[in-house]
Image 1 (tube, rainbow, N blue to C red):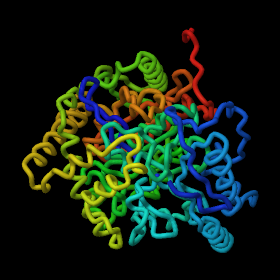
Image 2: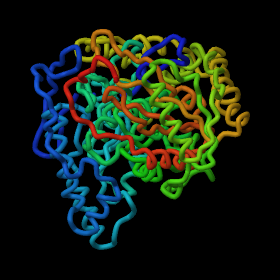
Image 3: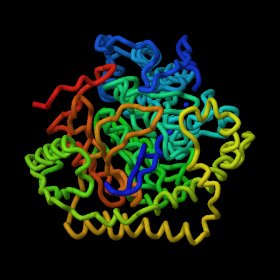
Image 4: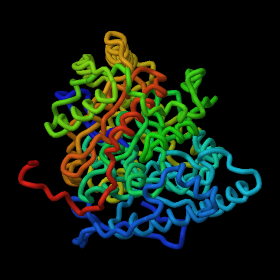
Length: 558
């Protein structure tokens, strides 16, 4: 979920978003999680981390790594070992990003098997031997835990791999480990701090350690940005891929609901949940999307993907992809910060220079009428979905319902709720079945306002290929006392409409990344990838993080 998602600049805000505290279990180290001050910096941290040592693989792309394995410079084993060592150096040591909640103890053995296979039969495809991190709400039936960041699930194991984990294994990836997240994908509390979980503690932003990573795929975003893996898998209900991608300076793709299976993913909403790829480049995100996409008999939503799903999304990468594209500007999502408006207007100017036809002031203001409809849908579906997931995927868990989890949290308040509570869980527990008129009315309202009168109407009225808006503002200072200080963003339109969106780095505000989002109608991933790639190649605005303790602000921007 999104950290503090809002339906419009004037609507009531509430927190929910991305999804822990266990030891690293690969390499030769384990680490504890230090107590944090109110800004999320480990106690005693006083020096700058500008001198973080250079890492040869930190900015390498998937194609770069494949070329080095092909030449014999590296093997999957040596690459895996280098990333594990780097995680030890800067995720648990140095800046202490705390983005990886657990390493896969079998990663090296998996890499060895893939190296032997490459030598005998050649690579399976572009992801053969590539280490990938996955969010800790995605089931893996191995020696790692899957907990959504909660201690409540630490004593049970998933019965089998999530469908997308099976696909990653088939593609030849080395599943390097699990990433931290906003606990329960930020659906537990309306006053949460994004990037924090009871099991994993707090993930920090690699651009400024006292700034937030956003949620809920906070660990996935921070790890990719910091060069701890080439790519990672996140999940989104509303903003949980695109927002952390934006504030951590990377590319994130939130697919059409049904393009990527949700079976074996700890749920919030059957209507809006979807996994998706996160990477430093559009190309790498497209490669990972091709491995994730595809029908699953256990997820009925994927049946709608027939004819709309591709195994290779790199075929849509076109440096001239903006030329002739009609792009609408959703000013509805501007106005929360002047510096962000200027930055995104500059990005739109770059699109125009690449031949895009810009249609300003595209009207999607129907979304301002959502009110509480979206959260009503999510709370109903959370209660139903959690019970179904626990019965299907956690047959040995002593907790069988959302009510059981609420009870666990109350009994373990010191570790699970030291900073914020579980008001959204409790509201969800009071909801009735999915046949309730309140739920059905809210669901119909969401579909009408976001799709029929929202994105679909705008795309048709203005004959658009995509709509653009600022993904988010720059990362806010982490504040465990008061919770998130989220000020604006554009994730809700595509989230509620169940359609795709892609965020690409659009520059920085005071050294903090800000992304621009491209979104459109259902199954428009090929067109969005084409335009996003063209923008990325024309601008190349991503800058590597510097691991600063804080941002030093000038007296003016002159």
